[in-house]
Image 1 (cartoon, rainbow, N blue to C red):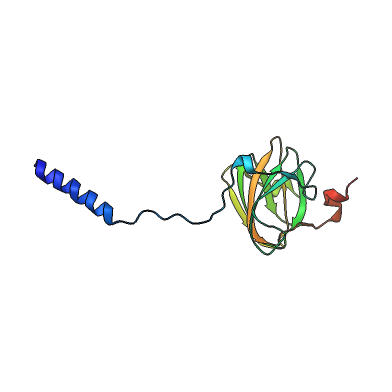
Image 2: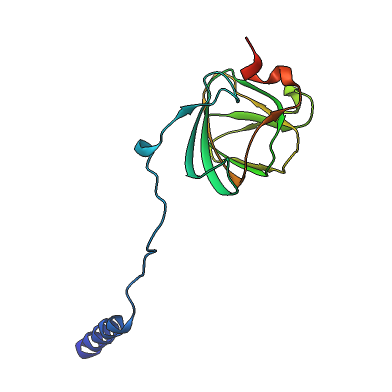
Length: 157
């Protein structure tokens, strides 16, 4: 019996010599939390921060960015010129599609939740008592247009 076990182990080790070692991608993008550079996003709302993780949302092509939405933030009804895919990383974002801001239609999206909405579809969002951090990805150029210009926080005094 001992001979069979030794032979089996030797055979398995011998096969390993003929198998190729794992090949890793020559280049990839890696972003650690300490690498993230947060910037003000006044067009989304007071205190909102954004960070580009990959790509350039203002240019054609894929991008990934994150948003920190402070407590009690209201993002009025708006559209984007590109499809938007959103994953909630922390907190709760209340979101709904529609051309009227109506909290009764919004659904609570907590950590790990995901939603996707097509380009030019009206939507709105808000937070309540806690900050929400979300990750957006899509294909640019990305932007934000409020249906009612009075909802644009950059136009408020």
